[in-house]
Length: 452
Image (cartoon, rainbow, N blue to C red; front, side, top):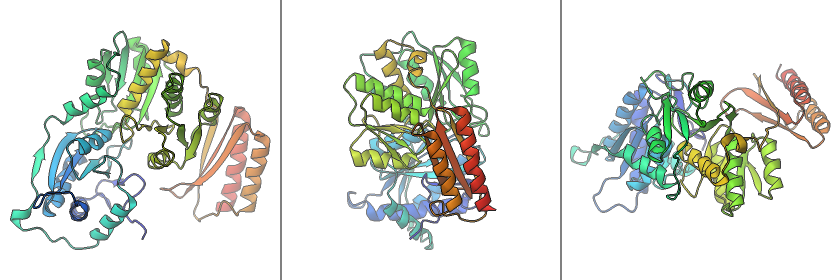
């Protein structure tokens, strides 16, 4: 059975358009509630399953939260409401409050007019395919509202933010603090706005917060990890030691050094991995994705740290980490997983692990960032009206082979179909920027001819 609604990162869309409508979301809540009731075998007799709901700061969250609450209650499920809360906070609180599932209402780094629904299991991990298939199947059935006495109840968790702040702080060594560091935090006018400043301030840092005034319409608007220019300017203007940018739901992180230079997820992953390796604390190797810069792979190889690539998406990074029994992985977009700290990618916790490495090294973020120079990487998206079999199309494969020969082992070529758009993504990277650009354009031209 193919899933109609669930993608690799939950259900997403533009608010008011299918599937992100109040009617659908209410039915989704009901369907999820029915399935969770069926699979919750450890409940006491007569007890209702409980589902925790968090959201980011976009205005549509109020409407969708109410719709989910109604659907879950109709299925006889109790609802725990946290209000605005980072996605990884919902993963943590689902575990901490022993809920049967957690739901996040968020479209992450997307504009305010988009929204989405993401589910977590009772263990704080993304739902497995079997449960998602079961929810999809239940969506096709009509709603049969429980008798009044069996309806679920709703309760607001007033101390949710404080619980999560303490959890984040607990992942940083109690023998360390951040005193003496001046840090700019860009909260993207998103879900971290009321928790991230407290975490870093309570650990001793002098904090300058920007992007911390959400109004429902400004989430990710020219701020946050997808628009780091605001952070770069603020770090330089404030003469800060470093800056940290989160995305709208708090699971992606980028950092800026005191000179205003941006460090992406690959560079931050290297800082964490090399620091753990130096101190004998790295368990196994590091997982990246097909888009991870080749420079990171080469740098880890020099340290004799194993490296493996997963498909693009933090879900696949997590799957490969679990398969190998490793703890550290991530994407260049800033999704970083540290499984000894949290079951989910967490931007605040990832930033704290970078600061841990910084303090242990006695160096600045500028010093550590300079240890990994990323190779030039060119990405060209080619629109396609027709499906193309990339592996069997001779002209495209000839262009790829020619590029690989030109790179002579010092670079990498990747072609992949987009999972969300009718596009072929052409990526070439290597140490010679001019050559990389030329080769990417040649392959893209072959793809365009095939798509014509």
